[in-house]
Image 1 (spheres, helix red, strand yellow):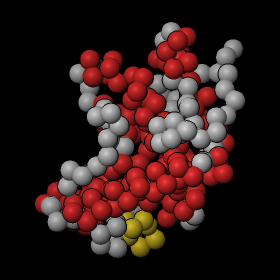
Image 2 (cartoon, one colour; image 1 turned 90 degrees about the vertical axis):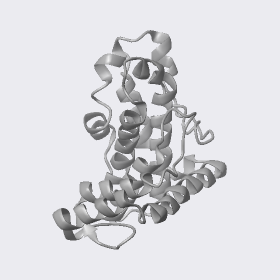
Image 3 (tube, helix red, strand yellow; image 1 turned 30 degrees about the vertical axis):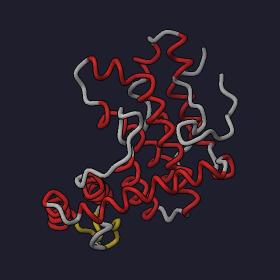
Image 4 (cartoon, one colour; image 1 turned 45 degrees about the vertical axis):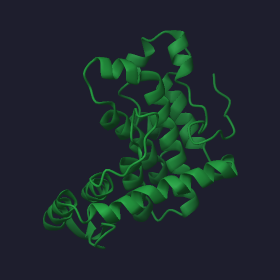
Length: 218
């Protein structure tokens, strides 16, 4: 039996290394990192940003947790990711892929939290972000028309998927771990799509941030 879309993406993401990324991909990811960090500075001055930080500080502060980027407060993993994502989002300064989805405030917040907690290097964070952007934008490119047609807002759906790949990479999950934790839910639906649609959904190795070396795919 041929691999599922979930398995194909998981294998590609698990095996992606920093050395696979050409210089233009690394440069683009660095730029994509800078934008939400600057946005968070503006977000910290908004009511929404202040409320998010206050909520997490009051309810989820944890001395050995992850850092809230505008205050230095430590909080448990999910709450820190939420606060940082809200700070990056609420100023309205975020990236966009073809006006279909907005990965930055989610994938960057996930990268900061998990990179810190798992003591990852900048190269590992860049690699994880490249994988997350590729995964999310590939999904958006191929499946958003049907998502929006059914009345769903695409960005929250696909950014969650991109963030899951970033987290999986930084947590050190292998192929099976990624299949189980990141991309297993859509598998049954994707199995029912046409062969052409499944082929279109295969990862193109950071083609959305510029093309990296392609793995051998079925």
